[in-house]
Structure formats: C-alpha cells, structure tokens
Image 1 (cartoon, rainbow, N blue to C red):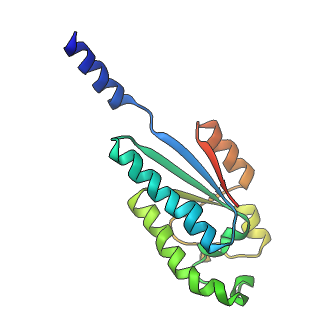
Image 2: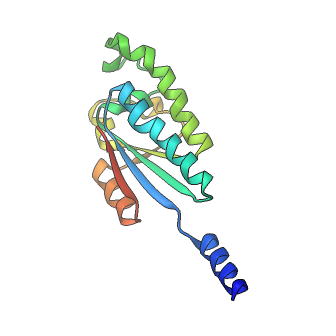
Length: 151
C-alpha cells in the first residue's frame, strides 16, 4: 500500500500542470509596475519554487506601459517626462531579469503600438508582437491562464 501511495504521489507531481498566470500590464507608473508586477512575480516564483511547483507567467503589454518596453524614449512622446527617464533603465533591467531568470514571456499589443506611432525596431528584444490586447487575453485565458490586471 505504501509503495502504491508513493508511486501515485510521484506521478501526480511529475504530471502536475503548472500554475498559469497572464498579467494584463497597462500602467505607465513605474512604482506600480515595480510593486504590483515585478515584485509580485518574483514572490510568486519563489513561493512555487520552494514547494517544487512550476509557475508559467505571460504578460500582455498595452496602454501606458509601452514606454518601459522601448529601447529608447528619444523621439517619442515619452521623452518629455523627466521622472520617467530615471525609472526607465531600472524597470528595464528588472523586466529583462524576469524574462531571463524566470522565463516570463512578454507580448505587446501591436495595434496600440502602431497607433502610438512607435517603431517596432525600438522594442526590447525579448518582446513578441500580439495582434491586439483582446486577442492576447482570449488566447491565454483559453489556455487556462488566470488573469491578473496591473493598471
């Protein structure tokens, strides 16, 4: 009986599905991005890692959060905000850390990006394009991801 329980437990852990989250990141406030997104992802990753469980995180980037995903704010409307330039590099380092260490996948709403006349060449390298914010939400929620909004 004990052997059966151990095998069942092992198989359950082996084939257990990962916890799945999709963040809807819309805010242009760097403090909110740090506290309500970056710090939360790190905390969740550590929590599940300590328990031997897997966490998959996807991020849909839209709205005012675009500015943190640009290689450079020069020649964009975001260049006028002096407070932004100080947080820009710090937030970018944190986002790159999430992408490289925790395999967080980032997608940017292509429609909104184009509507703001932002260049695709100016996107950070770890970003993928998604047709629209809504198609991204439909895709990830259809795959069983829980939606968390950061506005």
